[in-house]
Image 1 (cartoon, helix red, strand yellow):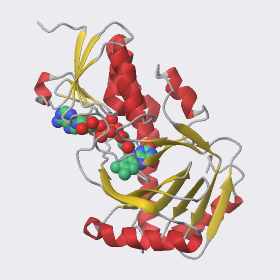
Image 2 (cartoon, rainbow, N blue to C red):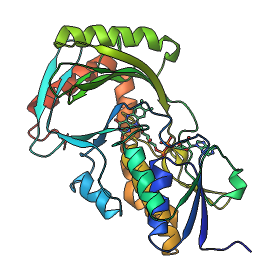
Image 3 (cartoon, rainbow, N blue to C red):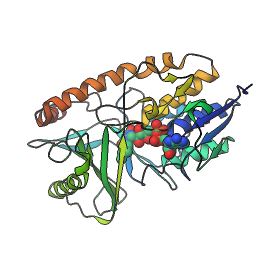
Length: 325
Ligand SMILES: Cc1cc2nc3c(=O)[nH]c(=O)nc-3n(C[C@H](O)[C@H](O)[C@H](O)COP(=O)(O)OP(=O)(O)OC[C@H]3O[C@@H](n4cnc5c(N)ncnc54)[C@H](O)[C@@H]3O)c2cc1C
């Protein structure tokens, strides 16, 4: 008979590592099987945003409440510049709109921080190994399908810290482009929800546009690409296996801010085992409604295209609290 105190997890991303950390803190023996030679290999040292708008509680407090140490690089951003085809908005917030973090291999990344926390608690991570779904308890393997793709560059720059977003279907069909700068390092990318084969062309257009609207200089650029996938299902348990993170379809349908979903669902997966409660009930009450809303938002976003981007600029300009918007 399988030992109920031994839990096997497939995938060492934020969702799988969060589950492992929480289980290990509760005296479970945890083994993670990761197909790559290290964590974070889906990413490239690029900056991402840990969004701070989907709850009243600060996201870093939530992360700590899910038993994770916040010892990864994180910088609060209180303002941002938004551009559409014919409009623009500068927003400022009294609370951080998001925390800029780094993904991939290397000191300070979210992935390396979670890996170190897990190993310190005795979690075994077996790299270069994958098992059949039937042989594990939790599946945390990331996106199963490709709904969106990002094409970008990381580089060094002389620009000051800044966050800029462009909403323009001629640069990012049904998506958006972003420029994030922190401590002279930068990430610029265009996120597409269609026309993936033209990613290189759209990236060039995005770079040109950011050069027009800022003093952008690009030193030592390195290209990267990535993808994300989402779907809405009422159950994240299949064949008695618990699914967490993007493997369960947990994502923000509108813009692809999936890190918070990954960490939260990883935490809830562990909680369901420790307290012997229904995982589906836990995640549904926490964020099913929020996912449905993001699905509707995406439908509007795609239907009205550049028109809704201008409208969003206007709303953003008038909004006293951009996080609420
Ligand atoms: C370019 C880009 C930019 C993004 N920007 C943001 C952002 O700014 N903010 C935000 O919130 N989100 C962002 N996201 C989304 C976010 O990164 C993901 O939602 C998040 O990493 C999902 O975590 P996860 O644990 O579910 O999956 P993953 O991070 O994908 O981890 C899954 C792990 O499982 C491993 N694995 C896969 N298959 C197997 C297998 N069969 N056997 C063993 N191991 C396996 C993988 O190698 C990987 O290590 C971005 C995504 C991309 C691609």
